[in-house]
Length: 54
Image 1 (spheres, rainbow, N blue to C red):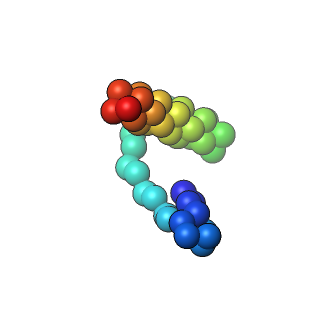
Image 2 (tube, rainbow, N blue to C red):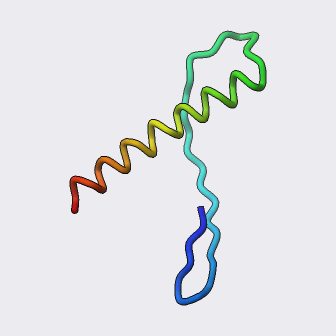
């Protein structure tokens, strides 16, 4: 994640543990897709909470 504050760009490393139900023989692409779907779900829930707070 990156942000610009006072004209300076700052980058923040984020690590979020997630789990996904995958077959033991899942390909790297399957794993990437599962992680992207989890990330989209997390972002959607965060966005919904921010909209309610306004």
